Length: 466
Image 1 (cartoon, rainbow, N blue to C red):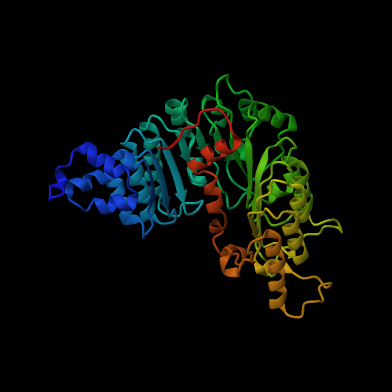
Image 2: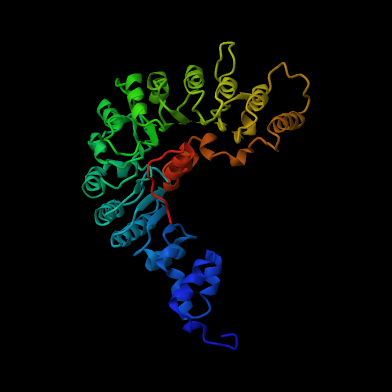
């Protein structure tokens, strides 16, 4: 061999062992040795997880990978622009290929927007291909519909297929939506009260509309031997007259002691108005977010600090700036964000866009909670009160603020420049989806379940990726 043997004649077991020791980049380089070596680049064990990106830059790569690997890939994440017919058609074709696999365990849709803006034929083809992928793959562990309202509206048949084929296996199910007009929408009859048939379910996302007392009872009365629920994500739009009681949440927590709750309010003035009725002391609230709800409620923020001081890890508020950042009246009480930093001993991230924040309060937050991983505030949202007469130059004031916060954190900290803020914060005509879709879809990633499980130190079995 050293004298110039035929590299293509190496035994298969040797070639497979060589490729298993290489990174993807090195495997790609090695595959250029000869035609036989190139065949080993696409062994199924090297491609269990693929992220298909159907945009212009990633389209060629995704088409090549779908042709080579769609028949054996285990986990497929599909990123596509839901406002472009060509990418919706591309997603439909890819789902059709995945439906022929039979062994796909994870389907995660990541549309660019919460709506589909194209012709009816492309949408119907997409929905039919998705149903076929659910029907033909017989052991789905994870399904995410990507927060698209039109997909949720057409998901009744899909849920029935999940119940028929995947009830014993499904571990993670994400069926939330985003509604740009949360004051008026038709509520589809999907039948979420049957959620108890998913005996292995450990992560669930759904809209508050479907969180009925019967469904809460199903979550509380888990069958003997079923793993507990670990993640629950709720999107609040319209609230109505129905409210869940604290005793219901206590019962759910008794059966699922490791449960972590994420509460998202998106374009929901109704949800923000009723937030004090939604929040219950026994809720295991870990992440709270509100996007473009039109107000900041001090009483609700104070309730978050009081009820969830031992669980809350992140708080996000993104609101539109109408001439100036949104002000909130504390009625001469302590600032609610400062109180959150003081009370919530597990707080890791605070993100405030479009809300007017006093520079003194930012310094106080940093001093009270120096272990914060993220404190994200745009420079245009910071104000100096009339008492701050020491500053005669705005640049000097910003530099001094950043120095004080950096000193408390023990690392360099800067205010966000305006170009890093989503355009919808400044312009009412801008598409708001780019302000929240990344955060909402991150909740639905398959890896989130295993990460949360590891953090909770639980003992139930969780599917581990190869």
